[in-house]
Length: 290
Image (cartoon, rainbow, N blue to C red; front, side):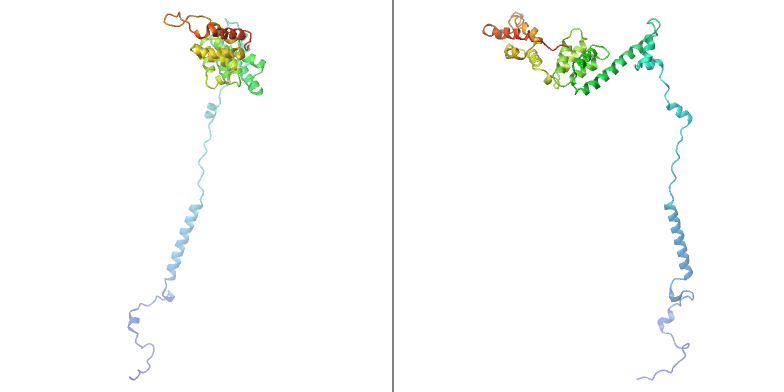
């Protein structure tokens, strides 16, 4: 066992090898950490950055400037008051009366046209009021409203609109009115054609009364065998509207290459009573009158 070394002063004791190469900590960084001034500098920088971000995110965007309309644009939006002619065209009663007081020779062409358009506008306003009245009656016009509808349908200014209205009426009244106007020789041909086309519409024809439905079926029948069962129903449901069609079957010519052959041979001899009975019954049964 070796003899221990004598005690030496602390200052003169030799350092261990590892301790000789280890750098000494700075005097102002106790414990060997980051210098205090550097820590404070980093903290100040972070604080400044945080305040800047906070200010940026909390700043509200400025609203876009509101365009204030100028006096010129306001004047453009405001429409000028209608002229007396424009009021007359719209059906204004005072403007129309003023033009009516002028003698026809004193009216200008523009005034005459405005007066005509004013009269048409007044009629359309009256028709609109009548539509409201019919709506209050449940959609089916009473006798007085029906009479007024017929008057409007015979007026050139409102005829097309009213004929279209006939097709929308519930029940058999609409088809009856359409048939009336489709066969009236006093109606303009194009309006009569419109009434006929509406009557044959798939939504309108099913609403026809039994009498009118029988007549329409008879018009569609092209052979004697198709007409005979319809004529057998005529005494029960037919009316005077089918009289002219039934009477036309009495004629024994009109078919064949020379138009001399009988078109309805099945209504002769033993079946002749079918035709005679149908004619006798329908001529005594009144059709709807408008």
